[in-house]
Amino acid sequence: MLCLRLPLLRPKSTFPPSDFCYNYYQYKHIVGMARFSLDEISDTGAFVRSASTFRNWISRDPNSLFPPESGRYHLYVSYACPWASRCLAYLNIKGLDKAISFSAVKPIFERTRESDEYKGWIFPESETEVPGAEPDRFNGAKTIRELYEIASENYAGKYTVPVLWDKKLKTIVNNESSEIIRMFNTEFNNIAENPTLDLYPTDLKAQIDDTNEWIYDSINNGVYKCGFAKKQEPYNEAARQLYGALDKCEDILSKQRYICGNTLTEADIRLFVTLIRFDEVYAVHFKCNKKLLREYPNLFNYTKDIFQIPGISSTVNMEHIKLHYYGSHPSINPFGIVPVGPNIDYSAPHDRERFSA
Ligand SMILES: N[C@@H](CCC(=O)N[C@@H](CS)C(=O)NCC(=O)O)C(=O)O
Image 1 (cartoon, protein in one colour):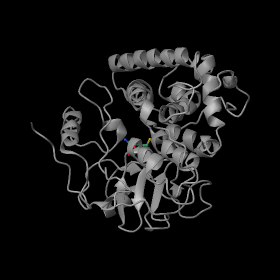
Image 2 (image 1 turned 135 degrees about the vertical axis):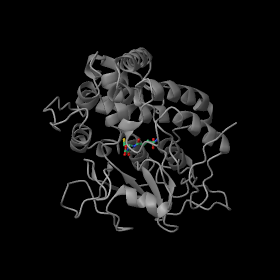
Image 3 (image 1 turned 90 degrees about the vertical axis):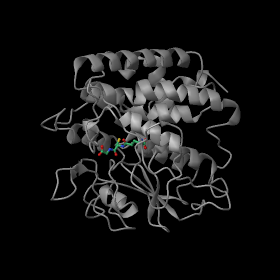
């Protein structure tokens, strides 16, 4: 089988060869190697997200190149990004915020280099330039792009957050949020303040994997497929799948507190990061307007319930979220106007205690 080899990484990636093949099949319909999400478009006009590149694992295995040491790793995020936010949520609820540092970039994409047009994530010049964003104190980088270039000289992929950075080897450990959260769940339990919280317990693994699959495809990535579609038909199809999946969640959540039963799991954190952005951003910016989140009583109260778990609300910076989406996609919102509403209060009372564990 023909595989597209991605540039050699330093240190060598543990990404299995079969996944490189999967990567190739994702890329093969895309013209050239897209660096912007908005360019990841197949010839049918549909948005096709490319796979992450750095896939090393922090592991308690004695031979691991990346052992779970306190103070060694740093998580670069954008508060705007749902994928990065799920890592931040894990950092807080697992009690890893003292062992693993984090910092956020500025919310709006800017030119990253004078010699080309690529716009991406930028660090602020000072602590006070943009509240919530911090300069890069480990590498003195001006952009997330620079971190990728430090980690791999011939990197040709996208410059995405989250980035899990190894301060010791000065490289990217992993830039795939679904894997970072799995590492945070298990590999740091010797130093985590909340080691007994297991969001991917053995008896629920199959159910969580299955739930993640349809929620990722139709909801987490589904809103992007609606927003980035460049033709009517793929938009219609993405919207049909999105609302089919939201209706399914509403039905499940009318019978139980969380998406995989009455226990909080990884699947809830993954769903939450999209729901919290839904009415404020996706309903308007990504044309997900068939129904608002607050028109789904169970989904809406569920979102408030997760928001109110200690450690979650501080991962939601709605100002960064709105500034980013409305301000960083000029082909969708040419003047970068940020809508005034709806300013939903997710700390308001909810009715989810009616399902007790
Ligand atoms: N597969 C990645 C996706 C991350 C991702 O797409 N991040 C976006 C922000 S939401 C990004 O950094 N985009 C930069 C760009 O498009 O240039 C993950 O889940 O970690």
